[in-house]
Length: 236
Image (spheres, rainbow, N blue to C red):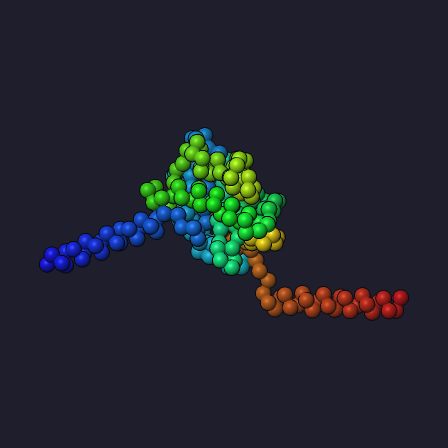
């Protein structure tokens, strides 16, 4: 009987530990931040992996408002929001939003990537599972790893300094932020879609990717146009 009780206790402790770990920010997840509040606090949320919010699902809009406790920030007059993240391995790179009309910087090499990566970890680690809900954190702007200090202001070893601002403006709890992914090889950032804040709702709409058949038709049209121009050139 004692052995059974001990086994049950260990099982419960293991489940509790697993639950806490899942509540903390995971380095494969995207980090959402609200800043510029009259309250003197930033609010952070772990909103899940890029694929879980619909990145790569051509033209699809995913409602991710259920992952955000709007009571934590609503009414705080936040003036900006943004999303950052990173991937590792052979597809290592940086996820970052920018305001409409802007394109984020490139990530020149592995060294630059490592520096940006660390700044994201500094802020993401503030989501430690103790918030309500557990995937959130309310952080004073005086904290050196707050969204305000790290993402919104220039300074040594800050995200803003190493890569640029991921923020997009909010007005009356509404705004749009475009999401890009920049690989760690200096290539141009790829547009992935956009986040829309509207009142107490947050959605992500993935970029539309042409079907393979459509791409083939565009290619054929281009070849025909080139052939036609050559034909005109010969008859000139």
